[in-house]
Structure formats: structure tokens, C-alpha cells
Length: 167
Image 1: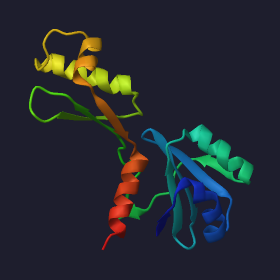
Image 2 (image 1 turned 45 degrees about the vertical axis):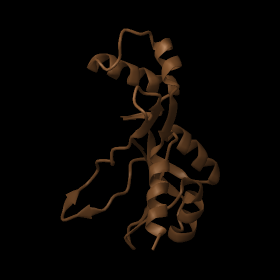
Image 3 (image 1 turned 90 degrees about the vertical axis):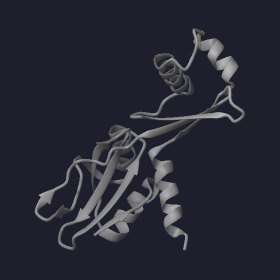
């Protein structure tokens, strides 16, 4: 049985529920997965964070935790599932188009992109597909009046959790 908690509550939850100060940290997408377990009871406490494994270890060690590389997982039907779920940063851009309504463009990135990286990807795609005439990147940004939004993996998880709470 796995209990997923926000990273900020991980240390306290592990101490209260599992009565241990051992944790395992592994890279997962742009952040990492941190987990602890009571093998005898079959309980796992897990959390995801956007921080690096080193930063996560640095936060847990002052709380008295011994931190190891790795991750607790459940074996299902005698198959070990060690593959972390792919995480992506979703970028959306609204822009002034030649139509009566604004355009919307969506893409995914493996790490947190900057607004310039998102706009450059949009510009490059439009140039490659022929949707954009011969115009400089700077002119494209000025004319399109873009609005960039990036949704992190933690944001997506929060959205899903809120939907699960709805009747």
C-alpha cells in the first residue's frame, strides 16, 4: 500500500507512519521521487518533487534522515515496475492570429522551459511548416502578442487531485 504525500510533508509522515528515518531518492523526469517503506507491513510513503536528487537529500539529511539512492515500488504479478512515469512540462501559447479568434499552440518539454524557449519552439515549428512568412523571431513576437503559460508536473498532479475530490 502506498501513501503519496506532498514533499513538504514527507519527513513528518514517514516518521509518524513508518517510524523510520530512512529514505530513498531517485531521479524521475525533471525532479525526483522520494520514498520510504516498512517492509513488514507492506507500507510505502512516496512523494515527488521538482528538486534535484541532491537538493532533496540536502533537505532530508538535516531532519535526521539517512538517504540512499533508489526507490521503493510494488511488485505486481511478479513483474517489477521500475520505470518512472514520464513527466512533462506542458507549455501553451495564445497568440494573435489572422483569424477572428486567437490561436493556441501547445507543446511539451522534458525540463522547465523559459518563455523564450517556448516562443522559439513555436516560431521554429511555424517556420518549418510554412505557416509563417519570412519574418524575424523578434518581429514574430511583436506581431503575435503571445501569452505563454507553463504547467509543471506538480501542477498537473494538483489538478488531478482536485478533480478526484469533486463528487
